[in-house]
Amino acid sequence: MPGKTQVVKISGSWFPRLGTALAGALGFLLFPAPDLGVLAWVAFVPLLLLLRAAQTRREAMLRGWLGGIGFIFATLYWLLPNLIYFYPLAVAVVALLWVPWGLLVWAVLRPGPPVVTRPIARTEPGGEEEPRPALVTRPPGRLGWGRGLLAVVAVPSVWVLIETVRSWKPFGGPWSMLGASQWNHPVELGLASVGGSWLLSFAIMMVNTCLVLAITARIPVRAGAALLGTAAVVAGPLWFIAHPLPAASSTVPVALVQVGVIHDPQARDEQGIAITRALAGTKVGLVVWGESSGSNGLSGNVADEQQLEQLSAILNAPIVVNADDTLSNGNTEKVSYLYTEAGASGQYAKTRLVMFGEYIPFSGELHWLTKLTKAAGVNLVPGTGLTIFQADNTAIGPLICFESAFPDMARNEVNLGAQMLVYQSEDTTFQGSWEPAQHASLAAVRSAETGRPSVQASLAGVSAAFDAQGRQLAWMSKNDVGSIVAQVPLQAADTPYDRYGNFVPIICAVFAAFSVLAVVRLGLLRNPID
Image (cartoon, rainbow, N blue to C red; front, side, top):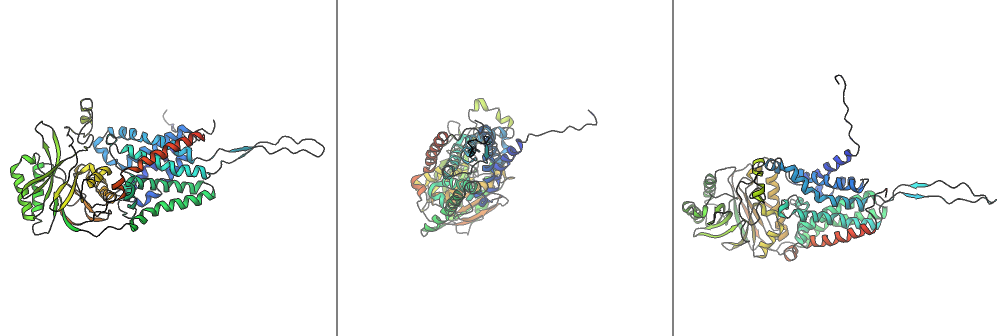
């Protein structure tokens, strides 16, 4: 009615729920461009405390889902302009992985039940009994050693399993992994060389759990949690110091060519040729162009190939170029070529394509997505496997764009004999976001994991280079056009991760199974009112 003001009441339960989503969204601070990865060791304490404070199983599961929504939505916000209406739905579906994690966090970290006791009635000397004393309720008990140890195993283990499942390509691939937040802290990446980014993710979430125990547990448990958390923080630096790199067998000057945002393939190719020709007189051992840098159908374009051969002869260095090429059966692949003055001496077709960006799964049924989003209009086909390019005396492992997010691909290239990892990316779609820097940062993590230097040439930035421990050698921002030459030392040092692979997720699966059994056996899933 006119003249009356309606007051909308919000249930009090929605305030902690909103807080849980915001606590999950704090993850966006950990990755470039904010690049506050040092906060990862404490950033999830608010989320864990809010999950711990849930009153029921159902509330814990809901808060786990909301925390996952906040984390994914914030850290991968740059996908929104491409997926548009589909993005909230995709985030909500992927965030379901956090539902069991939220329930487990609640089960192992929540306070013990209130202790209800009745004082013993006293009998008077004459034999008369005093009136029966009233019940006394003591506040919930603090966590002891059993629950504390269960928490520091269960909480990080299930988080790593979430990351493992998210790494499956249909879920979008391994973006925003906690371990990758330490890309700019090479000493912390020491743990990645042992167990991949999985081990670093485990350590980060374990430290956050130890901090919660330091706040909520009994005093002896607090001291133990503080010691364990400190050990997890210093483990990476200690490994980094104890395992220095061997002396470099040689140093390769690698020129990374960045042409900028040019949508016409032929114009991109010509810009790449012009920038590369300007390197004449500069000592380079390898030139790397970005993804989709060559003209479409490069392998059938005699004039373009001749120009690349001439450039290679002038610079006395091989050139890695990437282009979309159509096969005889009409399918299109994204292919990297190694050109020398003698012609193309190697090629690699991208094997892991970007879902919706380069192909639409079940395209017959989901082709309508191209009308609602910026999904791929034409499906590319994947290549058949990895390969090694011999660039003069250096064995390089070529990988393309999205493939830098997968730890196993870099490891497999190293096991094939790669002395250097070479990534080619595009990133033109995300120039107004933090994605280019986040993408480039992944190469540092892959270097630390494999003990091999890596370079990434991006069509429109960021282009970067890192040594075999993930230390930055070169960085060319997305605002720059031209080239940058990185002096890349070849320091091959096989790491435990090279030898043993993804053993951490397997161990975490075992830990998680035992944790679930313990939670069920101890009755920790019962609601307080049960």
